[in-house]
Image (cartoon, one colour):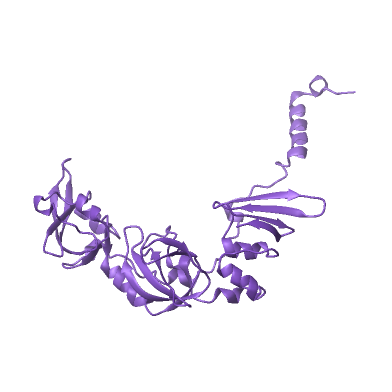
Length: 312
């Protein structure tokens, strides 16, 4: 027999019973709410690599002095200068310009802004108009000018890194023409020089690996904490091999070259190829199958966490 509560019970009692029954199925009412105060925040240790170049950053505008040098990374620098008929043949890319002074002017909207005055390698007068007032520029920690790289930063990075050996943790290498290729990782490399880069990555590191092969890396320096090419994303100060004593030499050789082989574990494959884009699980009668797929078409098939098949 099916009972209808609204025929035999007061409405208030029916509501109470309904809520009670709902809580039995959903479990929501029996689960306490967790607030931020209930979450224990762990103190994550700071890696020394993340602080290695932390003290090197572009100077605030308030500290700029006459003669401060900037590398021009792109000919487009010419397009952002105040028009000058005498600069029609000016090709600035690869040259160094010097800051001379600044002046306040009124822009087309009637706002007071500042213009920065530079001198080119051949004495050209170069004027860049900002969109900021003098007060706002002086308060800013870093004044970025498109296509210019501060040479003081490059000199500081060069002084800090050249001649030192680090362990590289990325396989994204570049040749001397700045063309990408895949190199080895977790090997010792030595910094031979530091060159000015571009607006995105201010420094280019020139390196040699343990076999004498030359290559380059782009490095970001300064206050941009979100950059993916900071020192700690490129290098380790200690040998990464020491953190994996159970991995055999044969497997570690594959990892350094970005290769996988049957029998490797998921952790070993992740060291070799990085984390996959997608992971799919399949449950069978005798084993759990996991399929990893990468953006470049590589896929790995694990059975009970051991690599059984792959396409690389």
